[in-house]
Length: 95
Image 1 (cartoon, rainbow, N blue to C red):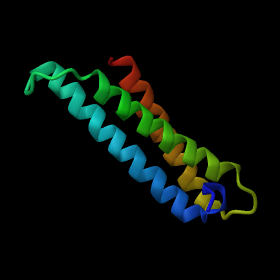
Image 2 (cartoon, rainbow, N blue to C red; image 1 turned 135 degrees about the vertical axis):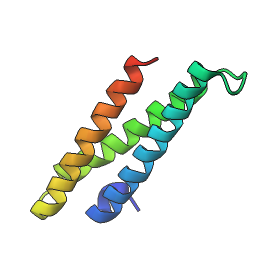
Image 3 (cartoon, rainbow, N blue to C red; image 1 turned 30 degrees about the horizontal axis):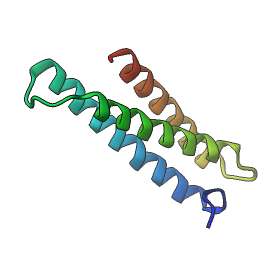
Image 4 (cartoon, one colour; image 1 turned 90 degrees about the vertical axis):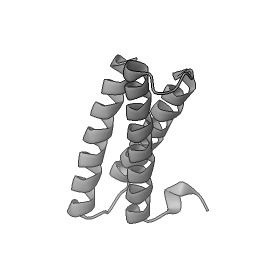
């Protein structure tokens, strides 16, 4: 089944899960690069974190582009888009 055929609530839930996982991985990478808990390269972890945030952002935008959805769902998608865009910008600028 295509992701475009999924209900809006499922897409927003997946957007949240991808986004929060990307934010957590980005935070771990950022903290490790400053406090050096592990002697491991953080480049791949940064890449995965940014990729997950981009996937979450694209799912939230996909919900916004759907037709005939409730205003409550539109507001949730707008907030999700704003939060993920700001966090993505933060992690890109912190690299």
